[in-house]
Amino acid sequence: MDSATLVVVILAVLLVGGYAVGGVLNARRAQMLATGLREALAGPDGPARVRRLGRSVIRIEGERPVRGTGRVIATVLMAPREALLVWMLWALQGRGDLLDIKAELDRPPGGGGLLADPRHRPGRAGWGAAGAAGGTRGDAGAGGLAVVAYDAEGTSTMRRLAASAAQVGDVVLLELRGAQPRLTLLVSLRHAPGSLPSLRPALQRLVDQVSREG
Image 1 (cartoon, rainbow, N blue to C red):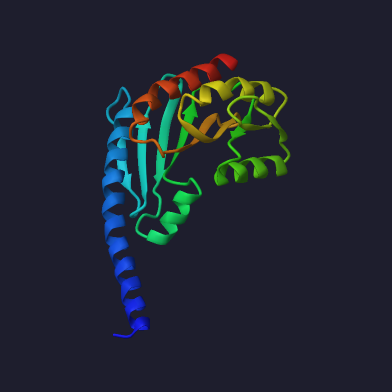
Image 2 (spheres, one colour; image 1 turned 30 degrees about the horizontal axis):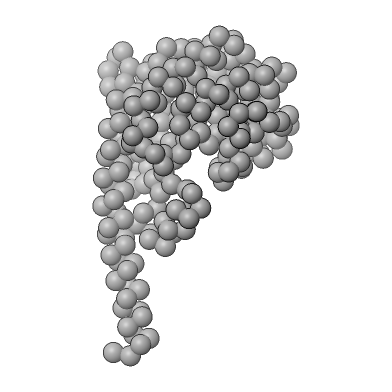
C-alpha cells in the first residue's frame, strides 16, 4: 500500500469512526438534556413534552412551568459531534450545544429590548440585527453584555435584567417583546446538564422581575 492510499484509508477510518462515535455521544447527551429540561419545564398540568426533530434538535414544550408564563418552548440545538473536524473547530471557538427558550408572558413587560453577549457569534448577530432594525444600542453595564432598546423604557429595563440573566447560566441572548409578550433566551449549554437544576428558579426570577417592571 503506497503512502497516498494509506492516507486515504486513515482519513476514511477517522471520518467513519468519528461519525459513529459522535453520533453515540450526541444521543447520550441529548437524552440527558431532554431529561433535565423535561423536569425543569414541568407545569401544574403535568410534565413537559419532548420531541426529537431530527438527529440534532430536541424540542421541549411546557405549560406554565413558572408563574407569569403560558406556554414555554425550549429547543436544544446540538453541536455537530458526528462531523469530527467541524466539532473540533467549534470547540476551539468556544461553541457548543445551545438552548433556545421562548416563554409566553401573561402581561407585557415594562420595556422591550435585547441583551447579547458579543463573545458568542449568535449574540453578535442578534445585537447587530436589532440595532440595524432601529433599536438604540448601549452597554448593559454587567457581565459584558451589550444592550439594544426597542422603546423608551427598554434601556433601563434590560440593564436591570442583566444581573439576573447571569443566574440563568451562560446567556448568549435575552430579548423582551411587548406586542405579543414574550421572553426569549439563548443559553450556551457548555456546563449542562449540571446547570439545568438552576434553570427553573432562574427563569422564575427573570419573569418575576419583568412582571414587576410591567
